[in-house]
Length: 277
Length: 312
Image 1 (cartoon, rainbow over the protein chains, first blue to last red):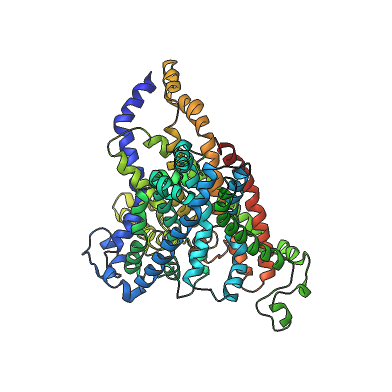
Image 2 (image 1 turned 90 degrees about the vertical axis):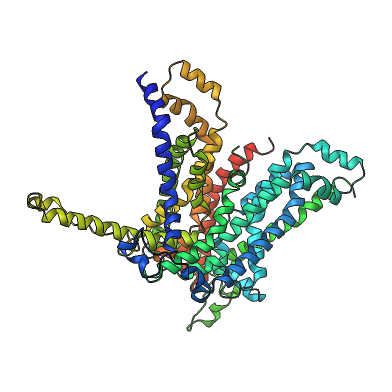
């Protein structure tokens, strides 16, 4: 019985302390980046200013001069938003058909779609560059939007499929009786019912697009370069620019981390393709 | 329109897009892997454009298999992936079990824990290798210097200083070097993906059968045997899924390796492809086909697992 007594003591004191310790430890690198972003470049590498320093906003105010931040941010927004919208535009009808009118092939089609996600990007990078340069799309928004949409399409279809499956078929059938056509069914019945599922799919796809760092780096040079490319290009500041680099990094990941807090649950469903509930 | 045709029509755009996305680049990679194709060659300018007349058969594959870097890259790929998997699964289970019970501030701790997963890989790598792990200016360097200062102080002390052999001088570790850069990559990716494992294990723990657990407690089962015989078997499936999804992602790790060391002594398969592709597209394509085969071995297992729950 000694174990039981110990475990209850652990529950009231040990668990909260340990849990908070682990949480803070994992968050520390992000905290450190945000803290460093308020130091001048000179202060950022001095041990005596580790935690106590005169905060400055200069790193944020000079982001445009130092890194041309807004141009990259603009490209990130354009490509991520467009790719998310395009992905939804293609995946909502497909998932609708699979969930409400499944055929014998539906399962295989879904599995096959998932398998496209496992194609290693490095294996097909060169043909993509070759094709993109051939048709003059290299380093354009269109190319990045297309690639981002295609790599996220399977995940979107799977997520939407698992949401749509939960909707009772009768509701859709009732719409059919009333003589609503398919487009009307999607617009009038499905979208209002599955609004939450569609929104969280969109959110997750947007996060994936924003963070993508393989295709966006390798298929762009200047015109369509995203924030991933900007950070990758400043990988080794040799300690000279820790302050300003922290500021631009914070600006690049801040909005996404906050968005991520709101879709933890959907993340599980989206990334495990509904296999963990 | 008939009931059967329409559903197919709605799926067509998605299916077609993915089909084109799969077949064309992969077909080209396969084609390039069987011909001599380089970006620059003064001696053989005819090799600089893809053509069937430069057919090489399995020559590129032989060339890749014989290169010393290939074995190294496979070893390194597996070392990095296995280390990350091991660490994230162990840490994930421990943390999930720790925070699964209610305690003050549980919601905030969850938010703190999950945050690393949303940091973009490029920022993750730049942050860790510079601000945290740099041997001089990063936190590591500052911490090592601080410890050495304290030890120096102890050496100066009147009595204790006599045992000067007890107070060693510490050397900071450079994580951009050949032997250590893989460790840095493992650290940063583990930091980013442990939250993912925690999230999935927690989701699964919440569906654990509580009645069974209470019965076990009544039967006098201790905390450890509850964990060993009830919780762990319940987590079997989520563990398999975490392992396989991560394997897929980490087999194609690139940004972190590029940023930490530029592949200095620490290449994985995707990095090797990138290096070959600087000039020898044929060899890069053959390596790509090997990567596809490796990914498929993992994928078959994953698809089987996921397929079982589909349509339930």
